[in-house]
Image 1: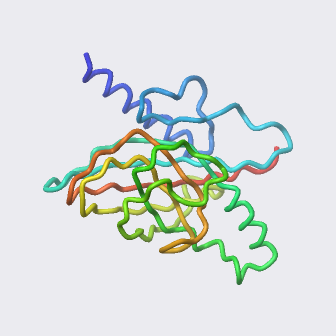
Image 2: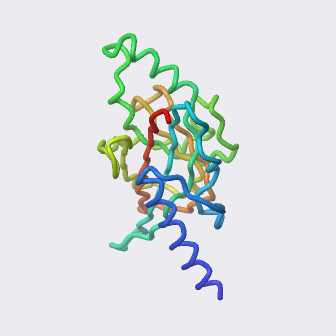
Length: 199
């Protein structure tokens, strides 16, 4: 019975991920399990620009050659620091380039996301990974993917995308149910930022 529920949750998470990737917001209940997408609110009101974040993950255990898909694990939280950086970039793109938001970090902090966050709650202390950069399923989605191989044992509960390999501006911080890793385990994080035009 537990196995069937886990399988159904995995399928539902993949459906939610596909909806977010295509720029649609899932309807109905999306809090399917601790590892499901969270924080998706109602449709944006008319006349409002909106950025919607989605973080997906998959895990490869040490000594294995196949991935365990976790689907969408968080849909929060674009930061005020990034929005301010965006405005600065309009004024001076040379001093505030937007193509630098590709550095992925993870940690063990469990305090919920806030748009006032400027760093992870408790980084795991390993070097950040440089993610790939591309459009998502449509031209209004920014996607960056990075894989981290852990050198220690951690209960990973948070992830962030930054503008630099150390310090830098935090674009987004996500908190999720623990992904337990040991030395040699890998997590591939896929971060997507959907920018919806004014309606």
